[in-house]
Length: 240
Ligand SMILES: [Zn+2]
Image (cartoon, rainbow, N blue to C red; front, side, top):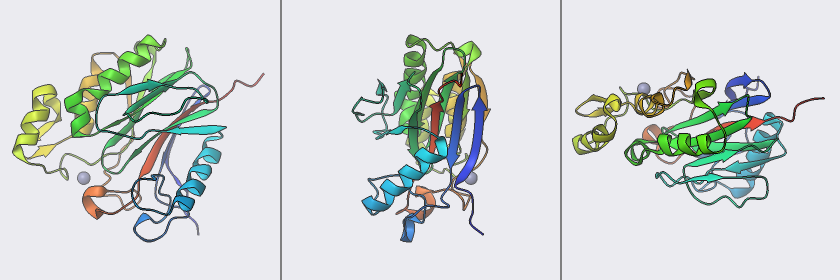
């Protein structure tokens, strides 16, 4: 029996959010099988087919895939935009899938079903230090998104028990984001993103799951050479 390529799905009016897992794709070896990243050493032809599969799953016309830099750069895009490297994308374009890739970091979406504005972000410990969630929320606001009637959908990430790091990294993140500190050697990325988005008033929808503990998800910490799953968001054209 083939397994579904979707880890989770959420629907907000015409807006769909999907989280992929590692099943049902065309990559082999350590990338087996639905790897969506073209920078990890996988066959480019397999990645292209996997992205086409994601585009079909989303029922989107095309995709814009984040090329993460672990910073706070955010771009506003439409179907014609050449995506520049950064950790956030915002659009009001219909049928355009925005995609954040991850394998332990936290991929997330911001969704305003009323203004029909969406965003995706990618955040790990460096994103918390750079305050990427705030950069993305600010751009989402400036494009017409209203956080108090919007949802922040947080994808799976490595949990605060599994994510052991050097003490100086905990201190660096803790200086910007106290909720992310579990103890002197552990960070909780999800708690940090929630803290940084909290002041805006988003409703938070958390898709549960620890990447390092779930065999359905890619984990860099667990596997080293591995693929990337995705959190994607699309605004579908309203049916008339
Ligand atoms: Zn865990």
